[in-house]
Image 1 (cartoon, rainbow, N blue to C red):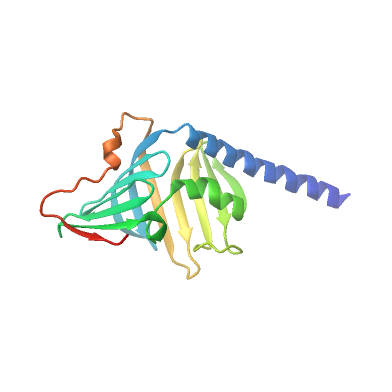
Image 2 (image 1 turned 60 degrees about the vertical axis):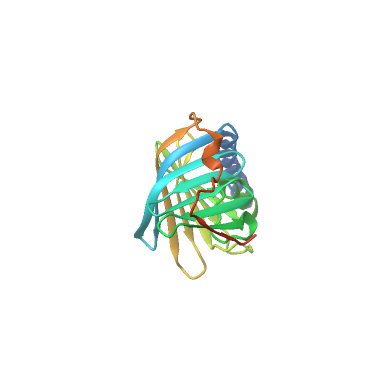
Length: 194
């Protein structure tokens, strides 16, 4: 009898996780683009902040004080403004490439998923990747009651922690597709690693 109750409880919890992830995926599918402020830190030290732009499928732009990183989902252009150079690489070969889709679709399929309600407006989803081939041990996603990710915390196998916090999130805004296009300018040194 105890085994039956335990099995029902596990099934119920798994369905809750799948439902929350499904709601996040549905929200993501209905998000054509977004614009947000972000702060990235490593091991609780503020590393950088800037603007983050995203458009389906995997287009993004990260504007920092000294760099602008642009991706059309296939290629990444890392523009170093102060050095007047741009490094071009393929997304699948760049270890610094970022993909919201992976956190929303790919990782939950392969990881052990747990979900916790933090308060009336926020949830925490933990993706335990310790038994996978991913390059992280655990990823934690903070999600608001509109099923939008507001923070991602990643811990790698060495214990290092990387955090991305999003604020001032605006979804489906009037955002030109040119935001995700690199425009070559005169005097910019190009280093093409493709």
